[in-house]
Length: 112
Length: 121
Image 1 (spheres, rainbow over the protein chains, first blue to last red):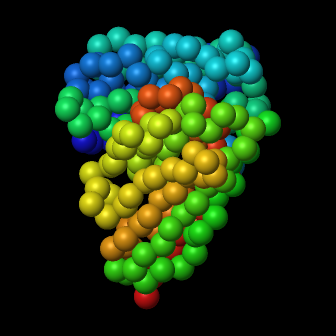
Image 2 (cartoon, rainbow over the protein chains, first blue to last red):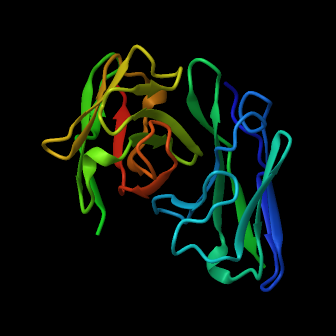
């Protein structure tokens, strides 16, 4: 299975909204509602921000939202704050009879 | 408070073996899937393996299938990753992560701080 495709970088000013895309195929993103998004600050472990396309774990601000259309999932960060600057990774179920998880290459979000 | 503490990383020679352990606390260990995810220096995340809460179902990335074995001891609240036939491309920080649910490929809601594995002669 190939990695999911994310833009290498994204940016926005404080208070703005930014959307990060994650493109896969019908065998992964398009085939299952099991897309997750992780935030990772430098030198830190990843943090789960979104699971099952659009659900937020407790403690994650509602400024973070997820969606999916066809083979592309999206993470939107509204009301950008300085602490949102981090790497963001999408992941998805993949496969048919042999299930695995695949990640995107990551997107560096810069708050200008 | 959920805590995941990895150990067992270090330097291994190509073709060698290492076993990673992850001691878990703060939750009912047997009730949740567990995963290993790695990150090569300066690179992105790569899913390695997962196991269901009971240990009855295991899953592997193609890149490690046949070389790595995931297991868990629910009586000791510990997750393991036995890594054999190591290659230079296995060099990475290995994270232990707790699944959000019991099913094997649950998204990971808590992560350890990682254990560095370096494969080099």
